[in-house]
Amino acid sequence: DTAVSQTPKYLVTQMGNDKSIKCEQNLGHDTMYWYKQDSKKFLKIMFSYNNKELIINETVPNRFSPKSPDKAHLNLHINSLELGDSAVYFCASSQGLSTLHEQYFGPGTRLTVT
Amino acid sequence: DQQVKQNSPSLSVQEGRISILNCDYTNSMFDYFLWYKKYPAEGPTFLISISSIKDKNEDGRFTVFLNKSAKHLSLHIVPSQPGDSAVYFCAASAEGGATNKLIFGTGTLLAVQP
Image (cartoon, rainbow over all chains, first blue to last red; front, top):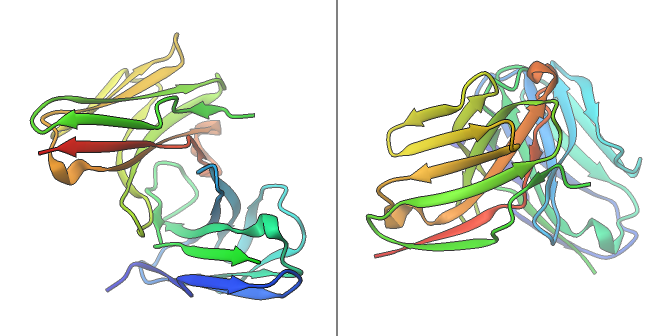
């Protein structure tokens, strides 16, 4: 049983398109996150949600819109894709907001924008 | 502004020897530090953490040391095993972990030679 799953694993698309990445966790966690790992290997937080409420929004362009239909899901929709959006996107979840709660990461989605 | 730095992109050690991975930080507000381990095509997994009120935390073969005055932490793995070969990320958080916002370093690729 995969604790945190993401679909798709790979995504290749053209500039200007709109795409979504889905994330699901079966751990019963309250908090979910999206991270971006760019070509320089920086792993940066983009968003966090707690009980479907947005907690962290790290100056991400508004072309990126997270959607949390329920506590177990946090999807990432990206409008008007740009070359610079090419990266690996990781979803994660934790029991709660405290850093003391370990974050569990999904396997990542490699997005390539051509 | 890179608040968490891992200046060694890679490290190679012999099986059975000690691996020492280093991490420096600039933000004096950081009060909780973590190490994550990542295998290829997988998401990071939590390894060990330390609070700023401690200077050492040990878990089996893994020990993390914190030097607050130098704003430096290190992860010691002894003895190193081939299965330890992975990318190791250092991460830090502030505000007592209230928002669970982790700032990651760029990682160090550890290769343990049999």
